[in-house]
Length: 161
Image (cartoon, rainbow, N blue to C red; front, top):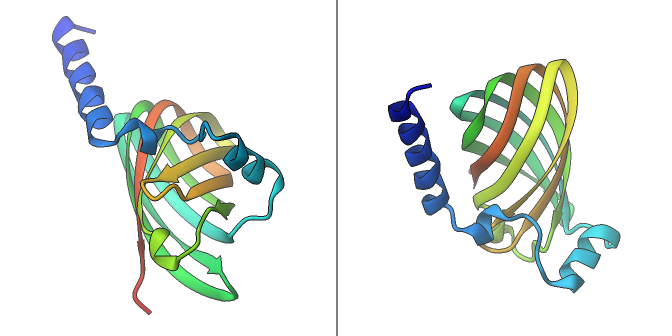
């Protein structure tokens, strides 16, 4: 890898870090009470999702899902970007949503540090947090071939019904 390529990659990663503040990227809250709720408490809502992602150092993807909140179902879409990794995966999964008091707080940009691998089939887990401090704890099954370690951000929008 040439020095120019390394500088270009470092520049892209720096831009991604600048675009998503560390409070949005870092999925663990330093507040002990919030950590206890996530570990032991019931979630505010749950969700089901499916997504596709392609990575070649920088990547992108999208998906859709359904948020189950206060006895109602709300469809949503998600589009994302990532830095670090290579491959293509398709995933389906479920998630627990914490600290969601109002439906409007669900939409937004979620960030996470990611690491994982898939070869044909795999399983994964991830934690995400948005700018309104809503936390998603996700579990998924994937198919494809990928290796990733880096940062990711996903923009979630509720679908009009």
